[in-house]
Amino acid sequence: MAAKTLTVELHEDVLELLGPPETLARKVQETLVLDLLRRARISQGQAARLLDVTRYDILDLMTRDSIPSGPQTAEEMRQDIENARRFTQSASTDGGG
Image (cartoon, rainbow, N blue to C red):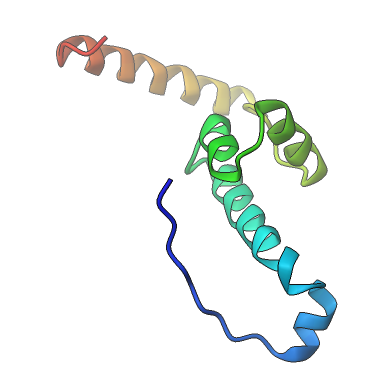
């Protein structure tokens, strides 16, 4: 997977609180990926691939960070079902199913 470097300036007091630089990049990437997952911008599978962990590890991280693994309300469930229907119809119409 291609990677790019991002340079960020942080106050040295913040760096002291975050721990050794060797682990900081991993913490930052994990935080950003889990935020994308929380906002439903990526799937659990995508998050696992981006962090190079198993789906079980992602579920553990989601539990640790209180990220729901599915719809929390009846309305969210209805929306998920409607999205799945639209996707299925679109895929069959486009010939990709």
